[in-house]
Amino acid sequence: MGALLAGILFTAALFGAAFGVDNSPQVVLKASGASNQYILRLEQFSSNYESVQFELRVQGQVTAPEVNWIDDSAAHFQRIDSRIEENQTVFTVYVDRLRPIANSGSTELAELTFSQTVAPSRFSLGSEMIALDGNQEKTVYPSPALTVVGPIDSGSDASSSGDNGASGGSSGGSTGSISIINGVEVLNWQDVRNGITSDRLEVIVESGQVIGRDIFEEAHKAGVPLVLDYGDFVWTFHTEKELNLPATRLYYDLSVQRLRYKNLSAAVESTDMLQFEIAYSGPLPCEAELSCRVGTGFKEQTAYLSYYNEKEVSLDYQGTAQVDESGMVSFAFSHASKYVISSGDFWTTATGSGSPTQVDTAVSGSTGSGTAPVIIVPPENQIEDPEENLEDPEIAGDNLQNTGVSSMPPELPVELLTPQPEQSGGFSPVVIMLAIAGIALIAGVAVTVILRLRAR
Image: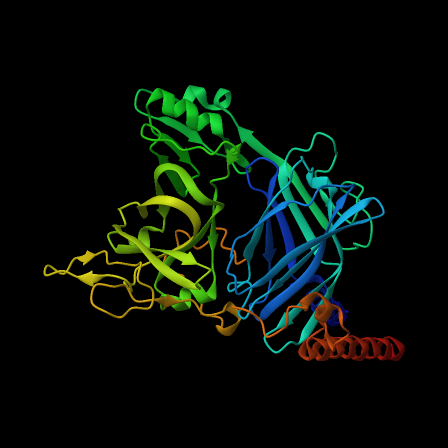
């Protein structure tokens, strides 16, 4: 009977693996912190795809948003059309390029600025997402998933995930899951004023908290720097100096997420100490430093910071620093995005004393003396899985996640809707064969048990 139970558990595990893992693309809408603005983003999006089409739906009638494409190259075909369908406003998103849309599997597509407040619970997706690879092979993803991240929606009880409509009454074609994360907590001056001293304002920031603009303003008035402690990442903003807060900016999400992209590691020849993405993307309101925990395994080593320029699919040199005894390293920042800290030096030249000096990174592609080489980041799907890097056990258990113009003519919207051979994310033949073997094992063991019982 023990063998029978083992066979059942084995088969259950196989079917759990086959049915439980969903690597389908996801659409993310995240409130940016600017008034009435969302960032439109793709996650788990294969770097094989160069074109995509999907529908973003809003309950009720809203004016089409102002669209600011993150990669605004004139060579790309990028458009959002709008129409009214029953009691919904439907925005059809078209993106077509001659290279991967998401070089590393996730990317920000555009800033959508609405003329009115649109609560997170009003959004949903259409019934499918259509993606084309470089060979114009079409893949249709039915019921694509949507995640909306925004401030607390007082007009809705949407605070959890569920099927379409469960989080806010959306309807009209979408059957994919919708996750509404509208519990973002905005910290204001009244929440942190007790943390101010004669030489700084220090704030311990918890998960899900963002920094209201008045905190920056009050620190500036007091003439002290603002220190934001996220644990393994600590910001120091020089608010005692010049402060530039855009009029529409309500808050900043300055949390930092560790990444583990194969292609970024390959670009620096596996010398990456840390890959990370700052939740906010764009210019910072003042001069700042970010201290990052890379781990004591790298203490006293020289570290090189590079910016992941997704527009040019390159790593651009930013600066050099020394890792301290506690495994922390600090760099100056004026902009927030995705970055890599590596022990490998791919951008600097040596002085007579052998110490690294920064070189001109403005000349892209030049090989002349005094210019930095161009470090190209290959598409994620072209890189084989590397072995786990357990060089620094201190951070090995941290939350590490990976999380051009197409040859298609301008009539992309029509081409995408034309019937073509479809692909689907079916089960691997290996998984199917193992599942069949598991069933056969159960059947064989069951027959043996029955025969033994009869013999008794």
